[in-house]
Length: 184
Image 1 (cartoon, rainbow, N blue to C red):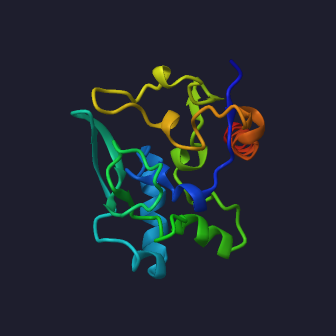
Image 2 (cartoon, rainbow, N blue to C red):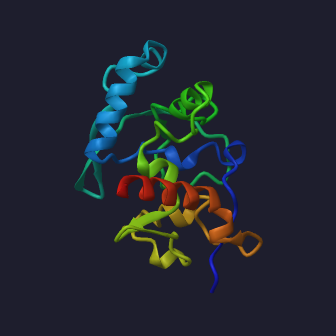
C-alpha cells in the first residue's frame, strides 16, 4: 500500500501532534534555552520550567518541552491523548518559535526542535522515513494507547491524500538542506 497523507491543517486539528510537547536532543534543549534567554517577549509567554523529564508507558524517554492543560474542541481528538499542549504553542496551536522566526524574516523552522518540524517523518540512519502506513505498525502503541503518528491527521494514511513524499515535500527539502549544511 502506498502511504498517502494529508498536509497539516492546524486549524482543523488544533495542533494535536503537540499534545505532549516534544522530546529534545541535547542540542535542541541548548538552542531552546538560548533563544528563550535572548527573547524576553518569548520568555514572558512560558512557565518558569519549560523543559522537563519525559516519560511514556512507564519508561523515561529523556528531556522534553513542558505542557499545559488545553481543552481541544476537535471531536476527532484521540481519546488516549492527554488534554495538554506544548508550552511553546499559543491558544490556536501555532508555535511561538515559528512565529518568532517568521517575524524575523528567517526560515519558519529555524528555532523549532528537530522532531517538531520533521513530524510525522522520523530519521533512521541519516535518512528521513515516513510514518508507518498501517496503524498496527505504529511504534507508539501500548495497552490503552493505540498509537501516535498514525492517529493524527497528518500522519495517518488517507486514501484521499497525496503520496507521502509530496505531502511532506517541505519537510523533506528542509531535512536535506540541513543535512547537507551539517556535512559542510
